[in-house]
Length: 279
Image (cartoon, rainbow, N blue to C red; front, side, top):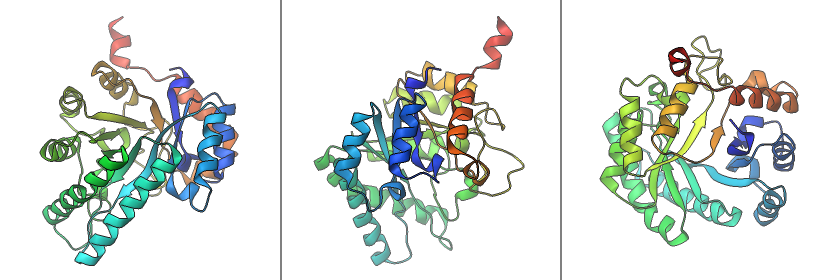
């Protein structure tokens, strides 16, 4: 895989500030960047936008919006306002898309969480439309269903996006969250057939993880079969950048330039072993 077609999420190199991220990704030959709101908090967003362009990087998305659920109407209203702020930030940064982790409130049943997600999306979609910003629903692994997202599969995401049927609402596929789905191939094709597959994130799922959130692996270190899913996504017609999104306390403790070298090596060697065995 050509690194010009690979983007890095700034949370992947969490120890770096935004300037170090931009300079580092460009220096290592990556073509794009997805910005986490935490990385640019307090920054002059216009300056950041210019620096990204000057570095020759393509801005892919702003991460994260969502978290629509809550036990009170006031909580849910605050979430809607926060999503509007995220859309404003995307506009200021020149980013075409906001990735949504949709939310789940402990103590609520999944169907209530899902309904509140749908209602929250209905409220912010007109604002996104006025701003010309796409929103992408990212389904999360079921282990996060109780406190991060009630959207727990590609099927869930496809159902939600199809039901709301808005031209600026699509899906972000992260292999970490959906690798386990028995009908993943069919759900990827379903999403792509509707022209709703708008983002593709890679890392790897380690069965013996040391932390439920912060021990993701490099592609090839776990059980996701990233090369196979990459092939499915490309065969379905997705032609966007491959985005690397790794949360890892282990890798954050390393020199981040060395970490980026490991990322480059891992994504460059992505392959489908089944295709190789047929040759």
